[in-house]
Length: 592
Ligand SMILES: Nc1ncnc2c1ncn2[C@@H]1O[C@H](COP(=O)(O)OP(=O)(O)OP(=O)(O)O)[C@@H](O)[C@H]1O
Image (cartoon, rainbow, N blue to C red; front, side, top):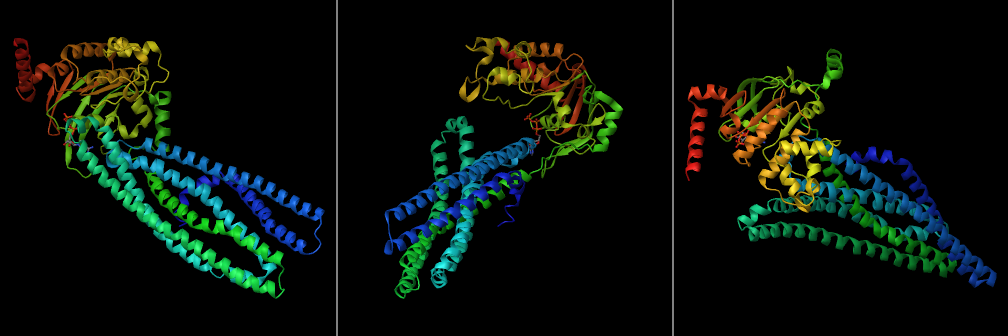
């Protein structure tokens, strides 16, 4: 079990001072507490001999002092140990989030959000309980036992021996139940992850579920999962329900033995009534800690199951990360000096072939140069690999080394930060945060001024619509605010890319939801802003593509045609047929 706790070592080391102070407080608390039965025993013995008002008062004061001191040390124990457990939980949560934040986008395709959420909440809380209450109670139990045993032994070795006879049985029981609790708890947590994932998908997919009238089916399916969860939980409850009374029975057994053996010792005058009472008080004091062992074991088992699950996420290495060796970094710095982070914006795909993990090849032997300051439009049938191709530029996915280059340097030999800071990317699926429109546009540019935000919005042709909202740019978006239309979201997303003042702008079908008139005005604005910068845009519309310096037609992962609008029309291929089709559509639209 301790092997499984190894991931906690660095955190425990960080708070060793607090934990050491907690340890000192535990020792002092228990030393004080162990004096209580002795005082009671003396008081009772005194009652049988020479009891005076003063002696009673003395005993009472001693008890008061013990109560006061033990209260103080208990306070310190709880404050320090529970406090440290909260601090460790805080650090773990931060580390977890930071590691999740570094993962490549593909990580979130292969891991369910609900499962990740369950690990960062429920499991984290189980680990905190292990570090706080579980450690505190077990330390208290162990120290109190160690402190009380010499006192009990002094009263009567024989009585001590018999009183503790049932204890090995308790330890065997705890061990046996502990293993089973651990296994059951793991199964419960796995089910909890499933339920969280299901709930999360239902909330995100609310529109789809309503549109397909699948509420009842989803409720039924959720209930099935929930039933399985409760079934597994009740399994654990049954186990716990057996553990506690069994432990209590074992303790009852030892109290009975104490009475039998102790009574005999008193009758034969080997120990006094006071001593016998003190012994019983020790046994009673031991009852709760020993019963708590069952609970503590449960906390330990839950905590270890959870730390394993958390550690899996902590150990996850980002599949896309900086690949420059220190030597390469140094060489590059010397060669380019302070301008290392500067980018001209030349893009090249060199004999690029690409397949997603476990899948067949999506892009085949693509060679293409996009000179800095020029524009490239990519058109092609759906699923032909357009998004895949542009995602390789900011390394959202990685091709084999040397296949994608910027300024003649393979993208994998760029540092991720400067690479991505120089690229404005508008993905196919827009995502806005539940913040103000201003914050959404200024995302990644925290120092952006109000003027810059408005200017970016003007170029993206969204400013007028934003200013019509009662709170203008300070309007909240999403769950706590307005719902923007698909086209408004796209344009906000374009403004977000523009404000970064990127050397390379990539628009992945980012004008699909705006009408052709607005599209033309946005493109016109972009042409001015992107003067001397590189633009790559994917489109299904000829109207978007026609003015680009180069147009690439991608069919089934290969470049089928490449050239300017006029050159491609002259070839009479896919591009021409797309052009004819769209011209016909336009004519029909005008005619009707
Ligand atoms: N994350 C992924 N994992 C595995 N396969 C993927 C992934 N993303 C895309 N693909 C596959 O790669 C191929 C190309 O997809 P891609 O999204 O690049 O096409 P596209 O030309 O942009 O399509 P569209 O015009 O419909 O957006 C498709 O067959 C798709 O199923």
